[in-house]
Each structure stands twice: as structure tokens, then as C-alpha cells.
Amino acid sequence: MQDHGAPAGYQRKILAAGNEGPFVMKFYGFYPSSAAYRCRIALNLKGLAPHFVAIHLRKGEQLLPAYLELNPQGLLPALETDGHVLTQSLAIIEWLDETHPQAPLLPPDPFDRAHVRALAYAIACDIHPLQNLRVLRHLKATFGQEREGLDAWCRRWIEPGLAALEVTLGKSGTAGDFCFGDTPTLADLCLVPQMYSARRFGAETSGLKVINHIIASCDAHPAFVAAHPDRQPDAEP
Image 1 (cartoon, rainbow, N blue to C red):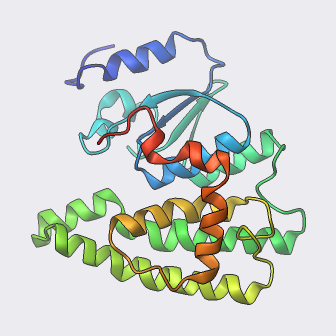
Image 2 (image 1 turned 120 degrees about the vertical axis):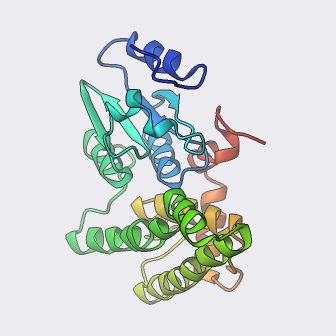
Image 3 (image 1 turned 180 degrees about the vertical axis):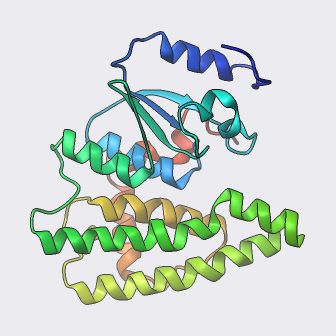
């Protein structure tokens, strides 16, 4: 494999992973990535520990040819297993749930599944994309926004998005210690990383009583604790 100007260690990580055989599960992520965070929680809940390959988003490693061969979108995360490369966090999580049914992440009833998916999509599709790194970089490069303006942009979408989710959870009558009942579901896997981002951007969340109760439950769960960005091997000070 050619160097392609990759940072030191990057090519070696991919080559080392590739030498372990085609049936080794490999997870490509970056410690503060919300999408990768979701998948880490799911992997922990399923009792899976794939080989981890760090892709540093801020250094642009996701745009290097070696990674683009795996995921032409140049986005994280990616999961390589059994000769397949899976992309998009929610697709990866649902694949994990279908192939490793222990600790199911969706309830059995079709209406309940639709409800849990709607909660997850409200976060992953409506709130999160607007605070994505490539969006923030565009705002800075094109409109000259600095840290204060970028944080304000993120809060503009995070706060009303979470406020609407709080109302939805309260009206559903099905929220318990977690978004649906008293066991983690796909919705919790999306909520926890979003609340982590909300704190990073200084969003006001103290009035979200239902959500904060759920977050407290998640913060006490070993699978969520182990998935926290600060506990990852590529975490930075």
C-alpha cells in the first residue's frame, strides 16, 4: 500500500488490521464522534470487542485514499466484518441487533419499534447533522465564524431539538429509566452522544427532566461508561 501522505502510524494501523484475516471485526472511529460513540455503546451492549482503528477527523485522515477505499463518503464510523464494510451508524447498529440478538435494541411490537426509531432519528437525522465537523468547518471557512459563533450555531439547533424530544418522551408514557422502558434501546444510543455534544457546545439542558433522568441511568450503565469518549484509546487531553 502506498503512503499517500498519511500521518505516521495511520497506514500501519490499517495494515496491521488487515493482516488479522478477513473475519476479524474492525471498527473505524474517532473518540469524540457522536456517530462512532453510538456504535461503541451498541458493541458494548452486545459484548463485542472489535479491533479498533482510529481515524483522526480533525487531521483529515477520513479523506485519505486508504480510508476512502473502505468508505467513499469519507465519514465515520465504519465496521468491517466477514468481507463486508458497513457504514452509517444507525445501519451498523441495526445490523448488530439483527445478527447479535442478545440485549435487543428495539422492542418487539411494530408500533413500539417505530416509536423508538423516531426518537433515534429525531436526534441522528435532525439535530446531529447540523453540528457535524464538516458543517462547522464550512461555516468558518465561508462565513468567517469563530468558536463563539460556531457554538451559538450548534446551540440554536440542539436546544429546540432536545426540547421537542423531551415533550415527546413525556407524552409517550413509555419512558422509564431509559427512553423506552427500563432497558437501553436505539434511542438511548443516540441520546447519550447528543447530550455529550450539548455540554461541549454549552447548550442549556437543565430543564430537561425526563432526558436528564435517562442520562443518569445511562451514566450508571457499564456499557455506556466504557463507550465514553474520554475512555477511548485515541482520546486526547
